[in-house]
Image (cartoon, rainbow, N blue to C red; front, side, top):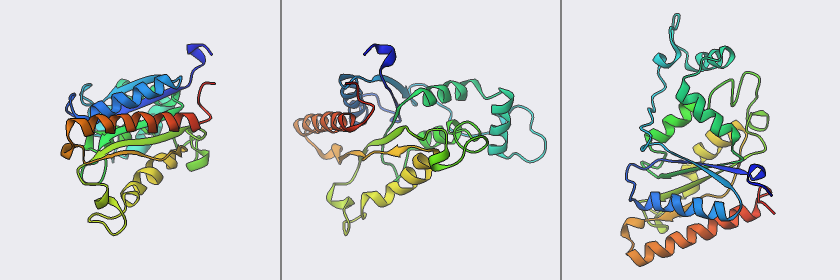
Length: 225
């Protein structure tokens, strides 16, 4: 299969330290996907100084009350989306697989990544308008997965653990963001507590990430055969 025919994975990475374990984990995942035959496109939000706030200023003059989703729909119809948003939206729509890479902060996405969702999951282009929700949204038929690290141990994120089941914290992302715009959500790849690991343990954890992502790619219909 030619490179042009290969499926595309878009990794959206959100960690402010380029030498963090989270960034190394993202690199391991990208390597595994390339080995599986994907073209890998990486958006590093901190490195790109992504502006996370969905603000009225990006839409030009707004009459009356500012209604963000209405302005998004209008900008889609008129072809006036903010240039940075349009560039990221095009990359999102071109990808067969979306990977959100981040550290779990306050049991959720870092603000810069949530702001990316706010601005790039554009109403009228990804959902709503000429598109519906869930199975009728624009990204139906595509896949998404979470790749993240935690501060707590795996035991603390189990039912009955100090924090409770990790899936409870992921529901609003899996269902409220990814499935909402049509994605089939794959199992997350998680490294628990890398800050408490030795260098040897972190190396082993990165190998587990590579294997988990490779297995996900191998199980996907998008895999190059």
